[in-house]
Image 1 (tube, rainbow, N blue to C red):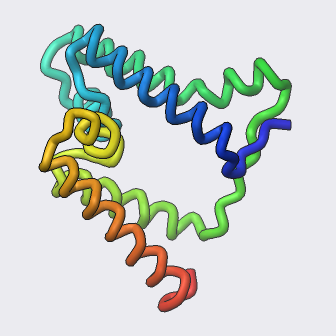
Image 2 (cartoon, rainbow, N blue to C red):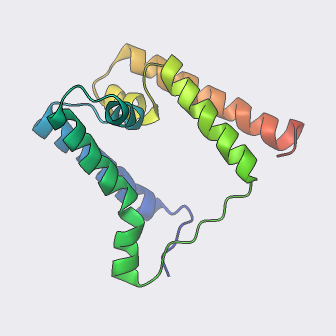
Length: 144
């Protein structure tokens, strides 16, 4: 069975793969890996080649569980301890935050921080602080 809980080795492996993907995208395409930017470019591509690399990247991200299924014979099981409504609201809030922050956690937190961008440092610190406040409010104030 594939383990979905936090382990240092799984986290290290995931971090290495994310860093490798971001590095390869920068070297091969000259692009920064930000998930919201990838999706935005799929909705409004500037050219056919721009659409193609974004579609391939998204297909790779979505196919991850299928690779796990092929390798282990079992799909990863994930239990999320909140309602579907909270997941939808959370997703919308993250999308709005990514828009106002001119990028998402992957763009700012992975690529921008690696490039020592002051704007990305400010955005990442804001994301982290907002996450802490949100978790506190959801768990202790509204009890979600």
